[in-house]
Length: 361
Ligand SMILES: [Zn+2]
Image (tube, rainbow, N blue to C red; front, side, top):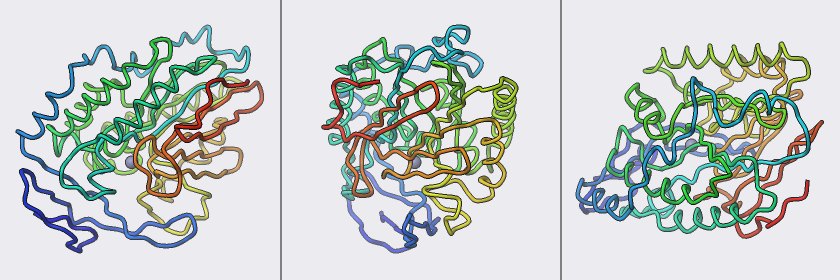
């Protein structure tokens, strides 16, 4: 019963659960160039009893009430014929990493799994978004919806998933809630069964849609991070992405925005390390970034870093939003307001308490 951080035993405890860690460890680079050790995986495994008890506290919100409404990797509530052309300024809300359970497990190193703090934060977010005027066209949550990995800790995951669905189902029904797939949602090294669980819980793990003159491509960055055990899924994802980019390129002046979990980079492609926990690898950057720029991708909105960051590669801006949930840096839990104009996209991050009640376009 040990918590092992980069090979060092820092804590042990006796409880109705035990904590295990894979012994994988690595180094990551902060934007200022400082190398910090990173724990790739640190998992809590808990007793069935405790997880069942937590699950029972959540009323059942049916999947159908919540799943993203996609068909063949297309969101079907935005009609292409209507949405393809930009008509007037509009906005959407981007958030990331509510990650129910992270604060107690990872930040407070508390062996007792609860996510009361995340519940408090997300309830406030829902309240603030519901009172926005005018209403956003949609609210996208860029991955790490829950902290527990379903294939590793199914009972704890179910309890956290139930909390997510209970809270986010309170978003005004006129504001579609979309999600993208994060590393915690399918594991750092996804397995086919993990992807199936994800799809059954949330809907397609990648999809496109048009909204207000912009083509949105919601990608599953986990295929780009590690597809060792899900090669076939990753190939289909890649095929789909190239097809979407080709379509975008064939339509002159088309605008493309990516929504994803793991950022391409934090500040620029000059970051030192070949492979960082917080970004996609240099190899992936080299293979993909020019293709994205070439297809007219303007922005990529990401999460995963639990801090705000971002930078530009040629004409494409990578925007990294801090977490709705636990913070790993100086930022406060919050969301980003993204305004879409005819010739530009503007965005601003707001800590939850500072989310405005009206958005000027
Ligand atoms: Zn993540």
